[in-house]
Amino acid sequence: MTVLLDTRAAIWFWEADPRLSRAAEAVIADPNNVKLLSPASPWEAAIKVAKARLALSGGFPGYFPRNMLRTGFVWLPPTDAHFVRLTTLPAVHADPFDRLIAAQSLAEGIEVVSIDPKLDLLGVRRIW
Image (cartoon, rainbow, N blue to C red):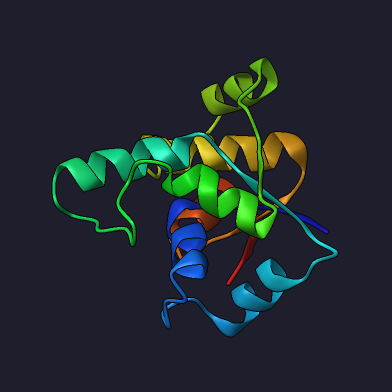
């Protein structure tokens, strides 16, 4: 199975945060699953760190590359197909980071690991 993680799911997994659901943790921890991460995630995290709305163990520099390497996550770079899909999403979820993640998942036909029920309104198949 290939899944795309949203920012919170990835960070909560790396931080062993109890807010991560058991179902999400099982999917992420399964070594047979491919875990993808959008470049939208470190961008979103950087903004939250700068606004003191997010603290990451070890600090922000190197956090994403270090944890991705440690857990075998892989980048899913945005493509033209993702951006085209982004133009067709309904205006029911305003967060630009979540909208890109939704467009990537829909264009790739993969599920998103996320706590955010607003993604459902965009037609995303969500694991939580």
